Length: 152
Length: 318
Image (cartoon, rainbow over all chains, first blue to last red; front, side):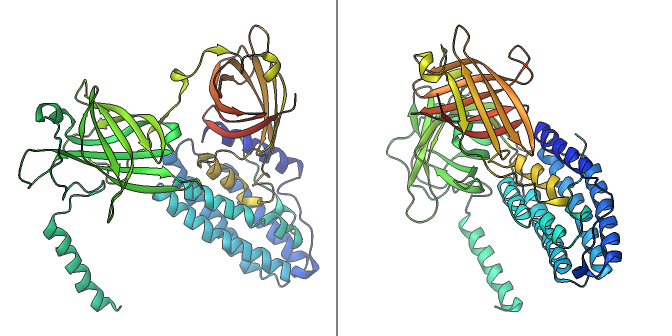
């Protein structure tokens, strides 16, 4: 996807590194305690590293594999977080956000598979509206609120 | 309807379709048209017969891709006449892709080639535009002009498909032709530098869609970058200078990063405004182009640089 990705993702790299992506997270008394937060943040750090390592698509042909791989990472993260069993409302809301993300990513991949680029863009808007970082912050999951440190 | 009842119905539908021989495939209908009052002579019509894929189209047409079939109508009495089917993958006003299936009928002679109305399909066909095709000068390429939905005409280039080749209903993305070759050469962005010099403010800034997306941020930016709306710009400004070589400096904020482009060879005609885009300095390599329209103090246009497209709207602040 050419320069766009480089420009936009460079920012993510800076933001993530400045915020200490992968570092320790906060705790949330409503989410089941520090142990949940620590393990969830660790899972998010791993997911961010995997997303950051994905090669950026330079053309439409490589867009679909990128979407598929992103979906796989987010789905794995969702399963990990679910297995941790956070009990608070904020933790459940974050988990619901992840679940919805997987659904939308799946639809996005299907749109890319049928070369409906307009729909791919529309699903991106739906992902943005989930405000996953806000949900993570509310659950006390500081690392989960960070963006992957993508290298341009 | 149960599956058991559905299967016979589908089978009957399939037989019915086969029985009437609807020749639509992935393009539009080409059967059932009566002989037109005026027929293109066969000697003129023959070079146009064939299957084509759209390889280039004027970007103002909002067409991503397309394919076309032109053939002589079968089974009707009287002289042979051309009928065409056209599939266009069009961006609608919301930026989403829609597949449009059209018929091309009746063909008539036109200066340098043939032309046909672009008809909607189904009951009550209406003319939605016109396609002009120039007599091909080689065996692979067909050029013409497309006017559709009261816009255009836009240049189009088709490539002839060999008999054994198919795009399977998913034609590749056509090259988007800019208007640069048709655009003005009058220097500056208006008759008087006083009219266009100064500072411009971006008026259609959008929030950064990835700022609160956490692990989803990269995929959002990647996906939107491929979309028809281009990269969301969260802020920006432009300063235009006159003088002997009018130029401009544009700073755009996208994805949380600020990027500066240098515009040179500013030119205008009527409300059209164009420029070449450089990335690092005005004397650096050209990495794209700007094309816009001026309406009062508002300048709306598209800046394309290094494969990235930004849709921009500026207001001249003086």
